[in-house]
Length: 221
Length: 221
Image 1 (cartoon, one colour):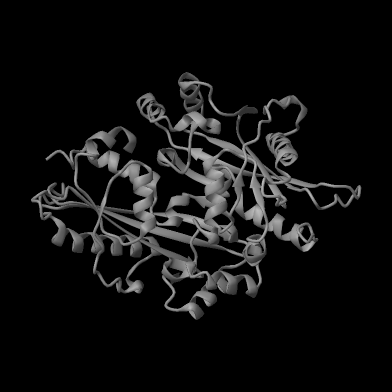
Image 2 (tube, rainbow over the protein chains, first blue to last red):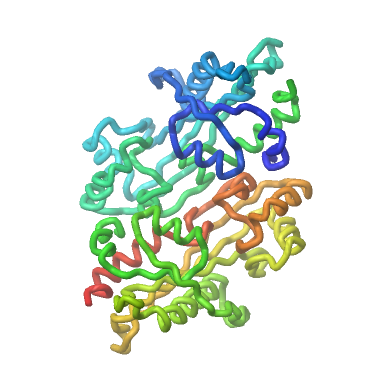
């Protein structure tokens, strides 16, 4: 598990290719110090190309991480990035992918369709090791991506609750127009799966995958 | 829901009868300002008296809140406490209740029995309204308690992981010897139910129950 690698990881330069303060918070809460470099990737992949929302999120995460790794592979002080972490979170309801709402009206509409029912949250994660070779082709970099799904059941509530919630501003920068770790947490009846996946980063799965990759030598350069 | 009552609640004096920084954090994250007054209640109720761990936790929560309300009903500046919130969290596995470990050895033992399986977390909450009358008997105070259950599935891991985790010190002040919001989150594969209930305070259920009580007039004195 991740916990046994923390001393080694503290000597590595880890870059989080995401502007989400929630992802940085989750990494920090388990003892991982990551430098944040936001990706400029447009997040405009053709959704119809993907069998499920998890694959779409993982592919977006890979594009984010690869874009950042091209810029961030070497820091100003000459230190090299050892691991770049990309992530992307989407909400799925009735076969439709919900991302961040573009305005308050769209946030209201998203929350109206989510209330009183269950939806799914997918977070895709991509780990890029710029100095480790991809085993299949023997070339740099090693890219490993995966995704995790969590079911979220919303309570029933009336329009006044949605209006009060939208007025807090919390929904605006979040997939599906809610934040489970804030006031939005009062609207969520139950989840099945990883909570941190809903918040934006599946820390248990990441811990298992990173453990495997470290054992395979992805960081021993 | 709670969100509609936040402006009114911000004018009330709310006391959290718990020393847990996690409970204060959850209340704050949804916009509730609570004053913390730790309870001196011994938490030594006879567990065999209760049909299930939820009832035990709710009763302990009530004792905490009542004990604090006796001391805190009037602040030094003369303001009255409008609501005192008690809470207690326990873990149940194989019909046995796990509370906080008394030392590192007990923490190790608890984590050994939890790994690779599912257990249940119960948080009992008690709301004491010192100036509202209990409807059934017409006398002060109104006391309303409830509990919530969440299933937690731990990953499988070896003794070295447990030793590394115990060495962080995180398990020591937590029921079941882990904190889901910290490094312990990497050990949790999945949950079913309310995440905040595992962290120590079921914020959705609290939101629903407080909404009902406010509508019934518990805070309109």
